[in-house]
Length: 66
Image (cartoon, rainbow, N blue to C red; front, side, top):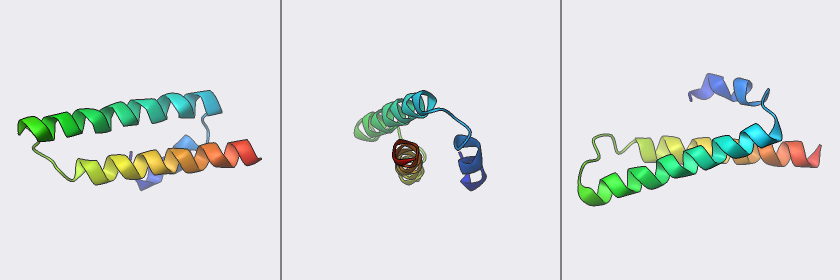
C-alpha cells in the first residue's frame, strides 16, 4: 500500500478495515519471525507495515468518531 492507496482505504467499511488491520499485524509478526531466523531480505518492510497499521488505525478512529 503506497501513499496513494490511503484514498482507497477511505472507501472501506469499518469491518473491512479491521480485517486489513489484522492482516497487516500478521504480516508484521511474520516479518519478525523471518528476522529471528535470518531470512529477512527487506528490513524496510517493518517501517512500511507499521505505518500502514497506523493509517488503518487512524481511519478506524475517524469512522468511530463520525
